[in-house]
Length: 373
Image (cartoon, rainbow, N blue to C red):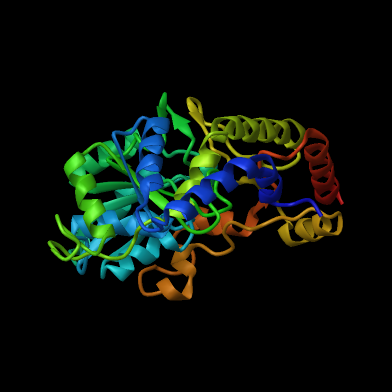
């Protein structure tokens, strides 16, 4: 079976560096906010060009901490795409706010700016909620059009948060993910382009005072002293061991991004005209967290690929507005037609930096057979 994500091969390559990094943490014993955490924050900020990086316990916390800092809560409307993972929506709900689901573009899978404007106007007209924030999701690794979204948010007076859980390492309009929105959240879940060996996340921003607020929130709201609680906080710190592992992985991350791009282009060449391949946006480069095609007869295609030893995944089989947990916030089937159609057709193929060309060719040939059979 071809691995969907190959962390074993990556570890074999990095084992001496990862082991040495872990051993150093074990020796100094500072498992919470040890020196590797500050080192990682500096290196992450340097990598993407952001002024500040604040590491956190998970990608979900990277969404939650900025919302806590903004005071988002009951009566607030937070706009987000319906075609994404549940973490995007569960955070505002946990804060007492209402998620307002927005349709996406059929080609890029990214939030539709036109539908965002429609949803904002609808919420304002209904008068039940205060529009407060927009969470734009860089789905599958492709950065959203933040110039367009920023213009909408500025005009409407909304906080813009980038959910870049899948896109760290991507670029658009000569800017790196982490510098396109006022605040950017990312994830270091193991399967992400830059992943640890457990949960982890980070936020990127330019405002130093706000970065200090985030650091306070992640440490139970502490001020100058750990027992001086100056605001409502939570426990959202990145473990030192995860920081050590990520530092080792960050050294080869640029090379891995290049390899992901090469794999994606080889898929493009062999599958173009056979299935709907991921849209390429001018001036943008995906981090390729996933390589997701669109097919008819998805179940039959996936079963045929499984029989050929090729794993697939569905990201995502049901849009958020149709999930039972969010039924009170959505407007039912047919309300967001593009998201609903994509959820019935998308299929993700193996994608990681260690896919060799013959393996990519084997996968592509199997997809062609499955689609044509």
